[in-house]
Amino acid sequence: MDVFHNCETMKSGSLANVEKAIVLGTGGHARALIATANLIGRYELMGILDRTGPTPGETIMGLPVIGLWNDLWQLRGMGITSAYLALGNNATRREMFQRCEESGLKLPALVHPSAFVDPTAHIGDGALVCGGAFIGPEVEIGKGVIVNTGSSVDHESIIEDFVTVSPGVVIAGRVVIGQNAFLGIGACISDNVSIGSGARVGAGAIALKDIPENVLVVGVPACIKSTDLS
Ligand SMILES: CC(=O)SCCNC(=O)CCNC(=O)[C@H](O)C(C)(C)COP(=O)(O)OP(=O)(O)OC[C@H]1O[C@@H](n2cnc3c(N)ncnc32)[C@H](O)[C@@H]1OP(=O)(O)O
Image 1: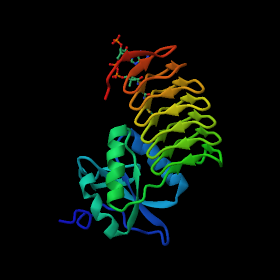
Image 2: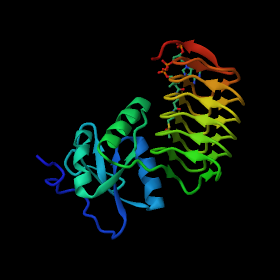
Image 3: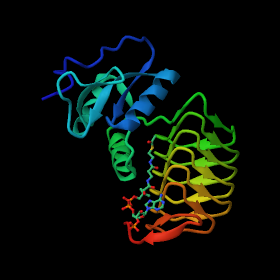
Image 4: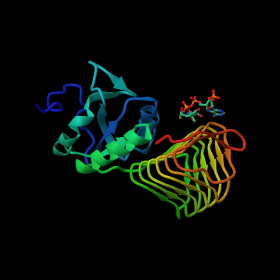
């Protein structure tokens, strides 16, 4: 059964010559993403898909929840070309990024109009740079990365794929954040420091030296609190 064609709540396309996009995810992060996408206005948002599917009449920021992630493959046939990933969990975001690609959907990056991105920086597909963020010169932001509100990433730093940078994080110059890592609110990463893949840096921690993969670090200076988060 084609769920979308049977879905009476789906927005009808109205804007000529504007590409259509779908949003994946219904949590808090969906609000931030939809607000940013509405400000940019590059794509017409047609609705939201989530893990469990819609409850009757469910909307988020005025957008109807129209179906399940498992129905992604039907979207291309409906004129929807692109997807935005509103998924806070790194592993889920990675999985759905791959499934969108397999479904032939584009994953445009989104940059809030109040963020500054240096012209020499590169922002990967499916990344979200939130309001007030600063992305410095020659910074690499990987695929599906979240750079949340008011964070800064300074010169030549590399943020690998599917990392979460929470609000108010300060990343100094020539830092490397390994894929799938999570940096909690207000964490600071000193210059030339590497954070291992899958590591979790607690809110307010200050990393002054390299952090291994798959560990939780907290405190000032950041120390290992638990290991093997893989
Ligand atoms: C727009 C938005 O809202 S974006 C959302 C932003 N949210 C965040 O940034 C959340 C930040 N979260 C944290 O810092 C969390 O503590 C995490 C994710 C790093 C770790 O969470 P968990 O793995 O669940 O760890 P848990 O809560 O079990 O704590 C483990 C231990 O570390 C300690 N700990 C955890 N986080 C911190 C921290 N930031 N600073 C100091 N100690 C900490 C706990 O007190 C606990 O210590 P104990 O074992 O001696 O009792």
